[in-house]
Image (cartoon, rainbow, N blue to C red; front, side, top):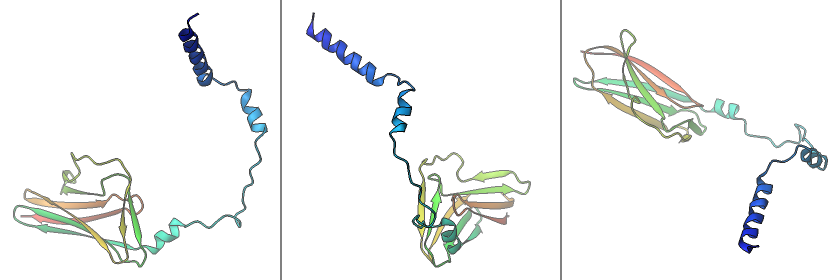
Length: 168
């Protein structure tokens, strides 16, 4: 018989055997030889950093500023860490903020993020004590009464600020 054919058949058989299904009777024998696991008591466990208590030490303030000019409205959100502790602000995507404008009837007339694409990776921003971050966008309005809504899209320190303004 041809040696190449025999080697090919042996390789195919070995691959089928390796990738084939396992019987359920193999699992209990493997578990029977496993060693018991000792669970440490609460006193023996190492102390972990408690995120709730760390979060209580961080103090963030926010302020929304709206400047109305004849052809442009500038909207700025300022977030400041007034606490003495370092703050790590987590964002579930590449979008760290959003700004929307609604009219007097409550209809959304403009949103900064509409039509934009953001990365789908978790990101974070470090804010030391006394540091701040500011985001600002501008919008070309029509005359009317509006409410600006600025949102910090953080998963651990969400912020939303609103400000009413009038465009003459």
